[in-house]
Length: 460
Ligand code: HEM
Image (cartoon, rainbow, N blue to C red; front, side, top):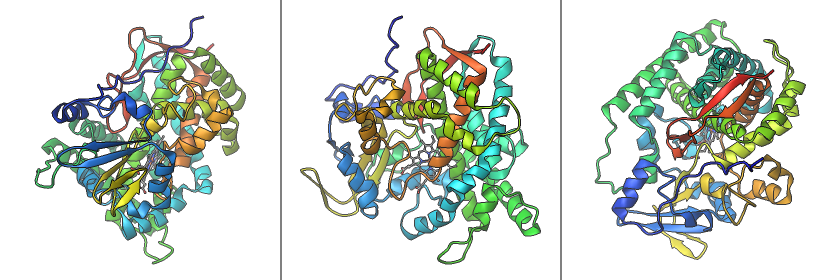
């Protein structure tokens, strides 16, 4: 048997290009706009007439920026600008006291105990996904990113608002969202490419239109929920939990407008990312049938084939499935890069960094760093049992970021991803579609340029 191919990786740009060429490449795709040396560098500086940015791969620097001194490296206002039409003042874009208050209210909803409560809704979404896939498991080529997006959106609506994606409003949000992404595919571009302040920034009319529609649909759901809470008829789901949880410091709950901002980011951050990770994991399994068989056996041993959800503890038994999901996020971190702004002068390694400089943390490069990982471009879920894998996992693995701004949905996503993966593998066999090797590009999340295609057939 020939060895499995290396998972696809974008072709890096030549080391030296003009600024104009860089901007052109950047606009097309952030990943292929970077030179190969970033996979070996501890730190890299980019100088342009307008801005300086520093990509930090040294684990000590990542630790400094995200964990030790996060207040000195806040999110830049440019991020807010790019995301404002859709996200308003959501926790993803705020800083300082506003952000701290938002996290005090949101975090408890995602703690372990609450996660257990959401499990039946995740299971129901998984069963609905299997029902949608069943008629498509004919061996014909299937674009799986659409299916994983659909499933992840379903998980969010079921866990947040106790409604399935078939609900009229939920379905409308999902479809509007796809339109929104088409109108503004690289949502963070403005943030990653700081232009001088005098350059006007426009949101395309379609971006503003779709954002308005999404927010008005979410506002409808949130207002209805606030009324149900007042009437004592609200289900005990994440939306109710968040809307009724008073800030432990001030005693005040979110008002409806604030909640709309947060629901928008839960939907955006919670479904795009999980969908991306799941789709890449499924693709990697098409090219690694040995791992696929192992996971199918694990799923058969652990999961019932019933609509009734098993015990939450079942999740803990999906060990190999979790390792595959983790490895898929190493190779294809759904959020490929994060940007912060230096608030005060700071010395990073041997360089003096001025206030206003952009600090780029790149899970994409860190997860494939040649000096930190053995065989970084190989798919090897067993690596996490090796000494190198364990060390790199601690120092150089940040798919959910780290520090106080770590993703509040990390535990949720690590339940959802392996669960849906196991449910799919229990039922179906996956094989690659000849000639359709996905090309990774950084849109809002790391996606495949022309989708991720595979064949699905029922497992005997
Ligand atoms: C595989 C799935 C996921 C991945 C890889 C992921 C990754 C991330 C990353 C890297 C950040 C930090 C971004 C930055 O600082 O610039 C983040 C923030 C966030 N994520 Fe996730 N996420 C996932 C799923 C979820 C889910 C399921 C939810 C909620 C339902 C969620 C909600 C959020 C929120 C609200 C933030 C903003 C936190 C803050 O800035 O304080 N994410 N996520």
